[in-house]
Image (cartoon, rainbow, N blue to C red; front, side):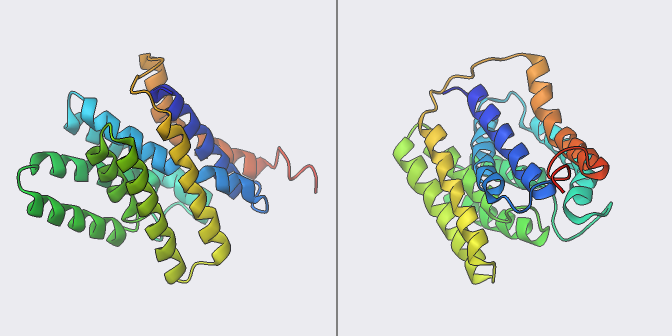
Length: 234
């Protein structure tokens, strides 16, 4: 399974997640499928970091996209133009990218690298980005695992389990904790990853970047105009 295939799976799962949130809140399958997206995107981010020619350019693109996406995200999730409750997932990935940059720059100083990772985890939680510290940890797990699929599986599974436990301890309902555990199924496509990039084209790359704010905007229009089920059923 190539990087292109993983991107496609992650995109479809993300769209399903947000469609379930915006249009089908009573159908849990949408949200369960959506849990696969974030670990896959963390994996793809780490792969992009390893192969990119310019980490700074990569970070600038991610920051610009996160800023563009924030208003549509707040409108979809909270029904208002701006909200400090939670920031969109691209900011989570940006924290993950910073963690990867620090890990690479400080590879000969493990204590300082660990301290940097801890600070970025705290920063992600203070900024209230989606998934909090999990993005930093998942990206680092992928980075250090490299080609070792056993370590990758074990570290990702451990991080996801700890995250689900933290949700439970923070008072989140058991039903949502069980939905969050569906993220473990993301290990299936990751184990089939063959290290190849697959189909590549500048237009496809742009489409994958633009898909995040565009699909949220489309869902906002659909919800506002009430043009698809479940509205027809009502």
